[in-house]
Length: 293
Image (cartoon, rainbow, N blue to C red; front, side, top):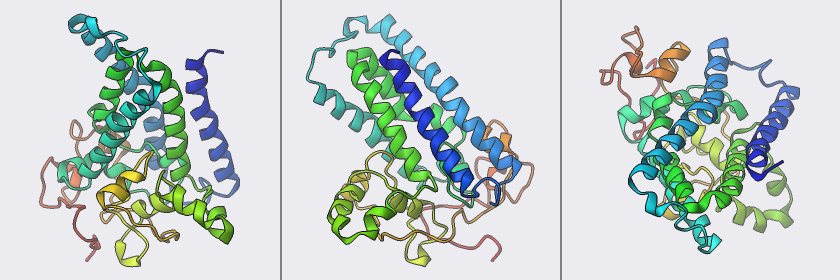
């Protein structure tokens, strides 16, 4: 089996293992997920790796080959740590900024909103976003450019590591509890939780409201590296897990509206997804407010 196949297989195995553990714990059977939610999650989980990422990669490779063929494999023999740094900055840092923008800009929020309206965590939450959220994500485009420049070998290691961290951060398998439970491991926990995303720090991002003293809906944006939140002042670390998840407006439009907005829009005028700009637009950078108040 070649490195490319292994790189693709590792996240799939991690996903299946986490999903089985979550199912054995009662998730997906005794939760608040609807058939509509599961449809969103399964489509999102499938479309990103099989359609969006390959399409962007092929387009970028085609355009680079047409206009900038001189730079094909230009950095293939450069120091591998420079390759790692390139992906951390041009993929992971830009994804942090893209994620942060989606909580600051009302239109971007609508594309990111499917990720937050679900009221339970779980590995299937990981890629719940509108199609356009990923189609225009800078990190995917930059990664394709870096691959053309000769950094494919590092990417084959980088991608499964990043996906594993992100899947674990969303999963109900709260692996970091072990670090918090044993005092001798607290120094290690301090280092890990300031370096990569953990369930505790990412759960806080999905918490319903910061009023609970644990959640940080407008922070903790990191994907692979939580270090970006620490660096840019958006980190909140409590070593506690929120008791409520979701978004202020819990209206759950049909899966095709949530995934294909603004191409397809909600027919309900009370919905944020009824138009690109509505009177119901919510600025997620502001404090939480109850939809029914």
